[in-house]
Amino acid sequence: MKPTPLILSLLALAACDQPAGKPAKPVAPAARPTAATAPLKAQAQSTALVATGPAETIAAQQDDTVQTAAWVVRVDPLTRQGQRTVKLFGLAGGNPAMNGLNSHIAFFRSSADGWTVFRIGDFLDYRVLSESPGRVDLEVTESVLQSETGEIGSRTRRMIVRWASFGDEDGPASITVTPAR
Image (cartoon, rainbow, N blue to C red; front, side):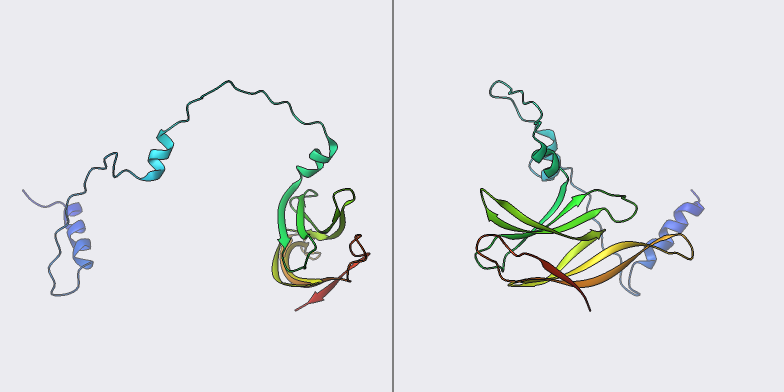
């Protein structure tokens, strides 16, 4: 039997993988997976849960606060603010082609009074670079419209978000947002 061009090509490629002067190592045949050696992912997919009691039907919630909360797509607790609970959070909204992560910082006042909330901006994304009492440094990525071409581009910039000490239980009266490098 005469070797075909395909077989010759495969042999040439196989020879390229071997260092010069060293014979190819034999390859052991692949073992067939058994239930004991099958990947965990495959095992998990093949095992469905079995009901052990009656199903409970749950109606949709009609509360406006829950409706608003459903827009939250990101929450980042700030952990270096002493005894105060402070968090950054982002709400989905706006024009998704131009940013869409409406970013805020919130200071917990009390169970009765809720949160004091400040809007920081509308970005594609933000990243916490550092945090210290009364301050968080952010890097934000945002969409920008190129006025010369009409095309949407993006840019990354940095900012310092600061707030004064808390008054009683109210949280800060204001925050500052300062461009940074």
